[in-house]
Image 1 (spheres, rainbow, N blue to C red):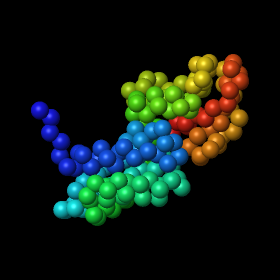
Image 2: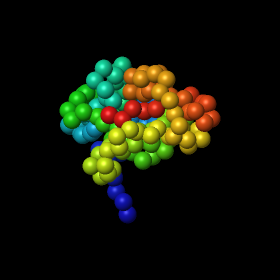
Image 3: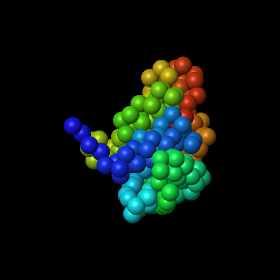
Image 4: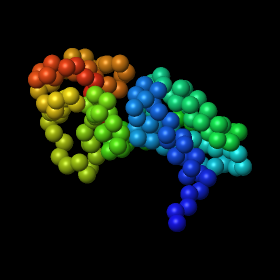
Amino acid sequence: MVTTTLEDRLRDLAGSVPDPELPVVTLAELGILRGLRMTGPGRVEVELTPTYTGCPAIETMSADIERVLHDNGIPQVEVRTVLSPPWTTDAITAEGRRKLAEFGIAPPRPTGPASGPVPVALAIRCPHCGSTDTTLLSRFSSTACKALRRCESCREPFDHFKEL
């Protein structure tokens, strides 16, 4: 029999909040939810690390987490932004990467020590046809954490979540 604590259940609820800019993935799948702990009866502290320091969605993420926890009986919710250590694309879960690709956004490749040697030039795979023959159209796309690319094989444009 698996038992979950109230803190675990609340962490799951907070982590299930969709990213406001990429609603196909959750804050947990993006690795933005850093922590959650009970600080007293009916009091919770949540730690979020945005994808970059100036992320305009952090206020919406905080409000969404506060709402879901309030709706589940937690009257006092404090959401803190934590910038150190900084968020990296290695924080995106395998499920998050799968969902990004399924949504048409080329996910970043893992860059941590377990991912092997760092390539000199990253081959960005088209999420539509799988080709690596892609061209950078703009270093910035719909959000600052994505770039706009075009596949030269299928000619479809797509967002690429930048490796950080």
